[in-house]
Image (cartoon, rainbow, N blue to C red; front, top):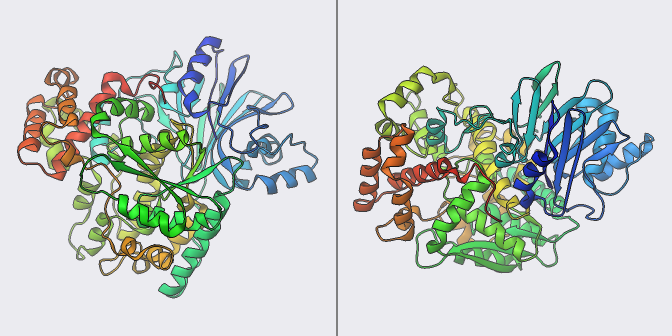
Amino acid sequence: MCRIFGRLGPAAVGEDLARVSDRQRHGGPDRRTVLSGGGWALGCNRLAVTDPEGGTQPYRLGREILVAFNGEIYNHDELRLRLLAHGYHVPDRCDGSVLPALYAEYGPGFVEQLDGMFAIAVLDLRAEPTLLLATDPLGMKPLYYHQDGGTLQFASELPALLAFPSVRGEVWGPGLDQYLRFRTPLGERTMYEHVRALPPAAVARFTVSGGLRIDRRPAPAATECPADEAAVGRRTLALLRQEVGRLARADVPVSVITSGGLDSGLVTALAREHLPELHAFTLVHRGDWPYDERRFAAEVARRSGAVHHEVELDPADLPELLPRTVAHLGQPNADPITVSTYLLFSAVRTAGFTVALTGDGADELFGGYDRIRTALDTPAGEPWTPAYLDQVAAVPQRMREWLYTTDYRALLADRADERGAELAGADRMAEIWRFETEQRMPAYHLRRVDHLSMASAVEVRLPYCQPSVRRFAQSLPEHFKVSHGRVKKPLYAAARGLLPEPVLRRPKQPFTLPVAAMLAPGQPVERFLRDVLNPDRLRRDGRLRADRVQALLDRQANVPDDTTARAVWALMIHQLWLNGSGRAAPAGP
């Protein structure tokens, strides 16, 4: 697991490359290497997980194939044996060390041989220098790039990419609207006009003479669906047990994140089968707040035989933590869970763990969100997408339009084609699946997990996002996932007998901050919020009506509700980013 960066085009100055590397060194503290030549550069900040003594990056095959790699290749032992049989030399046990020979053998199709999570850069100098960038099927490992004529630059994190002097950091005008609609920019878009995120399952090829071409690999076919619900539950458990077992193997200490809910609880129970001493971490809030899950997390740990760690967040620390969290994200993400996630992984690393297994991805793959159940229950012929999209949004549509200035509404009308994904189609479950797993999960969920875990040099492994689980979940018809008011039915069936009954019977609740309560008058966050959303700043930006933002703040103070609380939280995060929190080197881990 590492942070990577590089460029192809006119030569980069050495001190510029050092600055790029410095901005993401928190994610790769163990070793830093930069190679450069005539018109190219390739660098890596390494977090040593597999074969800590080996794995010097960039990896090389001769002097003409160089590879920088962020992620984990779980089938590297099998690939190494195959390559050795074909006469290649693989220097050590590090998973990434197989990549140069694999590229030499298969060309750009080498990514089809990989089982893992990855963002890979290949520099092929055998003819015209060619830069190849590749991402895993779900986008678990992000990669950002900037193309300007005959130059392409890339990095694992946005602040690092912006350290290249020629990268233009202009704010994307419609980005505020897309952020408030989807809680972060979706697809290849970022909050910067000229910076893109490489999409999942992509292979990008760039040469100075030919420019950039991006191809997307097709999604793997769904597996065969079992005939009944009992068989679905058994198959779900077998797949998760297999994947958790694979992901629990590492050359460094492995832990697990346990929120007290079904998804992470099931991962915790299965991880304990493979790790003799399992340490489970959960986030709690100092004081008496809604959404307190500490009792359930403790029950999961006790039932599984895990060592239980509570990481306490003091709300008084939020004004200090929020700018650092936004800085590590590099662009706004409206989920209040971000600050909890940042603090949680910091504690995991401080406790001596380099790898953490989590339950991320289960809701998207198995239909766990209430908005999915509500959309599917809407009678035929009645519109379901407006309510669904309002639940996805940080700020509902009518409130957004009320907040926007006349000039900003005009800009959005002129650039309507840039406003993001919509849902259409007769098959609701298929449309929801596509949107949740292909659009929202990579951009909103997986990038957040990556950036906030690697802020403390922790590698997150995601059992629910493994290809076998994804293919199986995709094969399940709607009634096997969501029906009669029940969601994630296969996971509940798989967890019976493994998790405490109170955990299985409890209503679903978000793993998040109790935002509405923490924004009450007199709370540290409420005072911080009003300072950040200063009317003069809003007027200078020109996209939000300062008087209506103030009215929203007053409404939350006088008649608090969750919708208004989420809206003002999202506006605060966006303004923090605009103020510079996401556009410079993060201030420490």
